[in-house]
Image: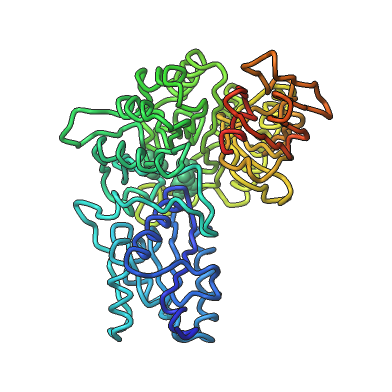
Length: 511
Ligand code: 5AD
Ligand code: SF4
């Protein structure tokens, strides 16, 4: 096959936006692979570039436009390259995308991902630029399983699973309901089947996704709701961890709060956007809860599950937000002390209710408020992370750390990043680590001292020598030798004679 023919079959996906978009891109990769295409190792080897877009704030849209400009220059030098733009901004702009970016060959909206291969065929057949931004009653890509390998071919241990799409809330500032359409839930049995399949492929943690997962089940023929779905997923054997995002405070029921601490696989973390701390602003935003309601939910969650980590989204400078309103947001933060906070400056989005409000907050003031808010959050995050030093946490190892490839990285059940020294083969394992240091956005951990790791079945024959530098296990003379350091454990048979507990259990289980 010539280089050109090979490139024509290869695609590259560039994703902007939230986890929902990341997952849509994974589904798009599955759709493309199913249609006979393959992932390009990098963009320079791809004959098809697909940009999955986001439109939540004007700044993100600007970033996408600049990126499209860079791809345009690449395409000018490589005229055979096909360029597609899909997802939220594509839905938002529709046909206008082809006017604003005439070098784009195909545009596919949030309900048209499954059409990408057909649209590519149409472009190659010479029909000029093509567009599909139609809303559909049923979204065909909703049930498509995403690939469980990373772009680089390594196996993943965490997977995203869409349980519902769309939003019926119409918060006054938000474009999502206009771009993703009405709320639709997938049948529970279908979701359970997908999670079972994923577990069979080596997945240990799932994150259930939806714009508002708490209202899962509405509109389905079967009688179900989100706590029931969680209970079903919690029963899947081989699955170790469940997360979900995003929740809406107004739909945070007692039943859901009880799932924390009640379902052993449900991780001790919730992302619960509050957006603003002032009742006046919350009402204008049409959020459907008050500050007291929100704080009541947090208190109930903490009563049920004292160690729960709490993250949220918040916005400053919503039209009409006064200094007093802003202070109410800061006071709410002081009360809750979030582990992590995603903070945004209000951004006007065409077509939303708030775009018609007259009392805009000047950009300079929005900037000032954001800076003050972020300083406060940094203090809270720092204090909450520092409080973990010396504690033992359970970590699912993701892979190598982004900043230092000699280090491993993983996440605690509370969704905190922990970096630590260890061998690559621990990837995908669940380990106990002791936190040795803490920063604003991550923790540093150490593998637990080995004395806690080894227990043996035939005491008369197995000797465990103590750390730090030496763990030696001898079995009937020649049979078993376990050598430290932990990074280089060699185990010789017969294995059935030893019982090894964490985290060595994980290592030995692989042998
Ligand atoms: N301006 C600023 N932030 C917004 N968000 C949603 N719409 C806007 C907007 N118009 C934020 C909200 C939401 C998060 C995903 O993005 O905080 O929870
Ligand atoms: Fe947007 Fe509100 Fe729906 Fe969230 S709940 S997606 S903020 S409209």
